[in-house]
Length: 245
Image (tube, rainbow, N blue to C red; front, side, top):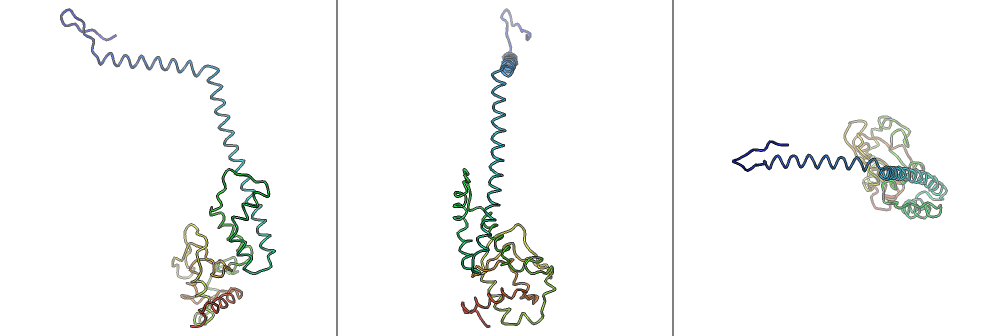
């Protein structure tokens, strides 16, 4: 106990000392009580039950994620089969892609996949669309893939940039829309200028190509080596009064 100071005949106890001693006493009592509680069988059972419930929730989440991943893979294969068997170069394929979310939702129901939440507006939908175009070989300008070339220098034709054909291709590309964004951006493989970070979709919905690929044509006279793409560019320009200079 604290020393008791005397003033005359009446004892005086410092208030600060009483507060400190009371706080220490309360902590000791609380720790003693908590020690009693945590060592009871009931408390240990509740802690173990909480741990098992947490593990179960994590395991269920992982199981659902794996089911969803496999479902997406099966759906992708299914959709690619549908598109590849479509007897049309663009129209029916584009209709299928435009209704991708609806087809996916119905496919999930038909195949008894039930999830608490499916975000059909997720970028995964755009990724599936890109995969369809690539798998159908309806993409151009992706070095090492659809072009069959690793460097644009192999496709330079000095006078091609001045042709009506090149003009039509440039117009076709410049009227295209952004289809899917990627992290980072592409650089020109000739002059290192920053180009874009999107996959572009041509205005008729037939082709996918890297953003600002027309830079290669305008600045370096690179000829895109896909005759079907050039044909579609010319046809689209005729229908939209962009043909000629």
